[in-house]
Image (cartoon, rainbow, N blue to C red; front, side):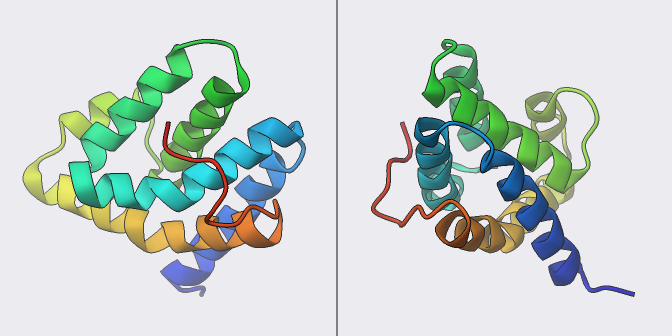
Length: 129
């Protein structure tokens, strides 16, 4: 039986490798988001960070929108949420919300590291907005 950390690492690698197939601009923006997303979660909270990315994802058909869409999809996979991710998180009880937040933050280190190793995006890459 694998630990949660091992499962998270495998999932992160699989999902980041899928991003590797995107064009360079999307890879760079996504990699930057992998570095900046935990900061947004700690600063604003998970719900607000997800709302920000959802607004960016729905804001157009450009590379930035695609990268935010991928990020949201990956968080949805990580949390194993069906339906509207933002709605599920927004409607969660306080204990569920804290669990979702801890889950994202603990697993996100793997997304960040694979963005560096697979996508070749450093913390100085594009991010947040």
